[in-house]
Figure 1: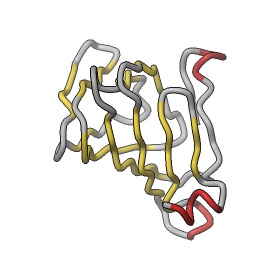
Figure 2: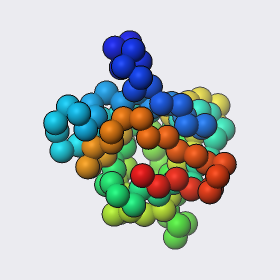
Figure 3: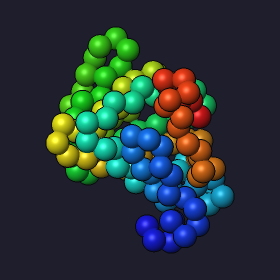
Length: 123
């Protein structure tokens, strides 16, 4: 992760950090991110140009879609929102949520969410 930070692919986006481990320039059809969602945060997100999947490696919290369906995210859980669904990503109550996140197509690596500007962020 030190190399990723040296290349400028550590992204801070308000409620979390994302180390962009594999990005578009690596020539794959997907990317891989190590994302740490801060405890006590709640971010409304939507990715209109990317499909995503999260694999939890630490922490515990729920993700919720706009129909009120919630899934408990805990180590070993994979969460795959339907195509381009608006969803809430929440940090744990007392601990950070640590995820491996995959996007397709891959991110360039420097994209940042602006949660204050629009309440939601779209890539």
